[in-house]
Image 1 (spheres, one colour):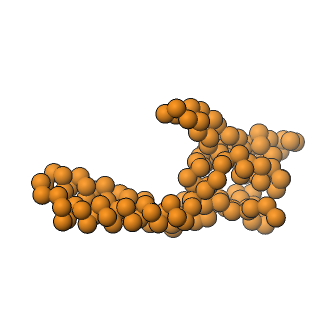
Image 2 (cartoon, one colour; image 1 turned 90 degrees about the vertical axis):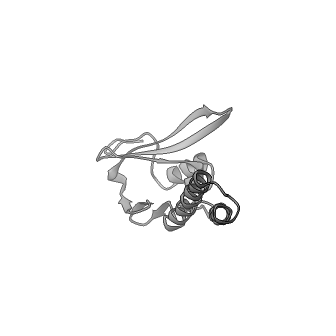
Amino acid sequence: MQQTQWQPQTAAIVVQGILGILLAVFAVTLVTDTPGRVLIGLAAVGLILFALMSWRARPKLAITEDGLVHRGWFTTRQLTRGDITRIRITEFRRIGRKVRLLEIDTVDDRLLVLSRWDLGTDPLTVLDALTDAGYAPGAGAGETP
């Protein structure tokens, strides 16, 4: 059975939240200068907030009977096959390694960009699952694959 939903890995989100809490504790107990305390405190709040919002937006992408569901931090979008104009992988080199992104173009000129963090797996695996589910990469609305 093929996977039908993708989300950030649970362990990664938990570790990120724990690191944010540790930074907050260090900012309060160990740092004595005010600018350092403020900077470390802001970093702690940022990590905790990012972990909470990543947890909230799970699953990030899912194949349902009605189409694709994309969950963001504040909204959930339902995309039918007619709403999607193109699905593709963008690949580039960054800091000495290859980075892949899954891009989904929609009819209303929105671009959904999902990274390995968002999907919890390689975007090529997700593209294969989407192709098997009938979402042909590169095919636009009304086009034949």
